[in-house]
Image (cartoon, rainbow, N blue to C red; front, side, top):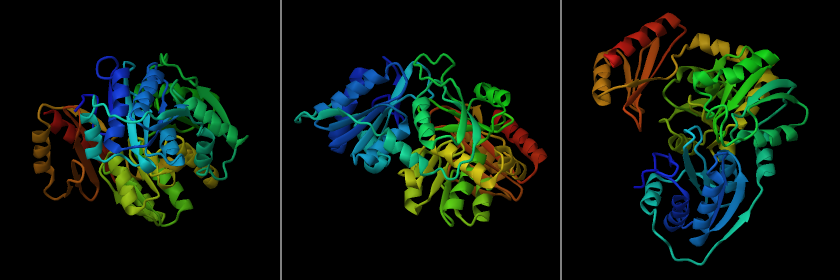
Length: 442
């Protein structure tokens, strides 16, 4: 297996793990393994993305595929174009929020479904294998206008609002502008770090990091805006700030989007990850929906959504998936749903969220570097399983009547990831976080 192949996608250091020769070889391997006759490609704002995309397209075409190049875009535009153009596969050249010396690729199959694990691994093993075929073609395709129509199908009755939009100098700016232009006058926008810039003068866009919050939050407060939105590099994740500039944790955004979805699709199924779940489950039950838990990870969430025909799926890490968007994740649809829900309810984002925070306080995800993750998890399970409801769906979850935790191993590092939640008890939350921290660090 080539070292650039990770669990779900491809990423690596430019000139070390990944270069133009690799990109071209990936094109050959994708066609040889999948038999794809038509493939969509696109790329993000990284300096190397245009050259990698051209090499990738050449490899695909040399292997016999018809290639549609949609140019500079976000990952979700590849998802959309793959379905819209009825292609067999789609490949996005992006390193998302990885360091500036990285790049990578994200692959999907027909219908923008994730590739089966064995197919993805077979492509990795076929890197460097040349296939003999009649040469295919490469042509440019413009699918953004059609994508905007699909995205705006999620917006309903948006009233005048003032938004701060932070594209982080990544790929989000032009697509956001296209959506705003189609929306008309409903939304006032203050743009931050809006222009794509391969040098990332304001740092790599990863709004999940606390040190990156001020770039959006300070402008929300200064402008008196109704909310702030920030995206990562390929805008498949978006993050929210209320009118006071307070960051809205991902688990509460999942609950909010579940509410908004169920208002439009009563009785629908909602998929969520098991790291923090009580708030989502309570809101879904209250709205008359059905909550369905899935293991964490985009391929697993998408598979579960397809299995149960869920209308929406959400992860606390800010990946949000929609049945009416090929069961794929989007960083644009969430803010359209949020401003629609704010308009429908007449409530501010803070008003919509603060009841969730009070009812189900959450620790946020904490990462711990440990020498022996397996032994540490075994010790914690031995201590906490008596009297608790134990679940091994995704790592270790133990639930009591008034609090629960989830502890998972990282797929790529010697880390344990901990989340703790309670029922309306911040003191108990602090107590249990301290207790578990002492065990893990001890």
